[in-house]
Image 1: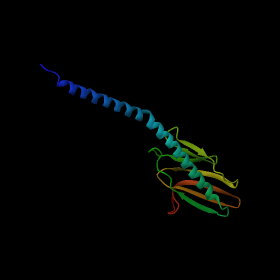
Image 2: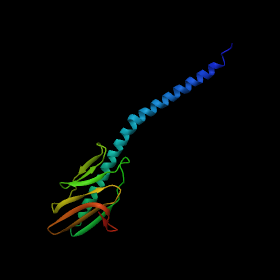
Image 3: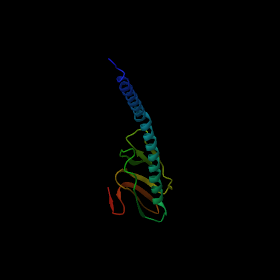
Image 4: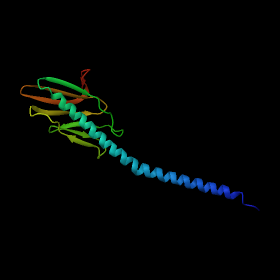
Amino acid sequence: MDDRGLTPVVSEALLIGLVLLYIGLVTAVLYGNVIPEYQTTSGAEMGDRILATATEHVQRGVFPSYRLDARISIDLPETINNRAYSIRTANRTLILEHPHPEIGGHARPAVSESIRSIDGSWRSHTPLSVRVVGNETGYRITIAEGNVTTGETR
């Protein structure tokens, strides 16, 4: 019996098996290590940019100082790495919180001592509303969820 016709079939089957094994290993390495690490790094950078933008708008809401009631609405991204996040205040500082432990941070707005307090909290998926209320004795900054242009805040 002549089995020489079987050799090319077995050879091609082994080659296909090795190629599939290689593709499987490369995919596992990318999705197991490289891609999640990249997503975390890019998410952390995006979080820093969002926090800087929010801080800038809080600072801008105070000037010029003759305003007694200033309102600003900011559209920020709804998610970081496909997860919702929030910004809250504590000790005159904005704090970005995210479910991933490596994404987040805090920033202290550069505002004058005439600002008595910075209060409030905000969750993504809504515009960030910044309101500055005050008089000659001092100002209060409040962040909240809502859109200033429509007057809707929560």
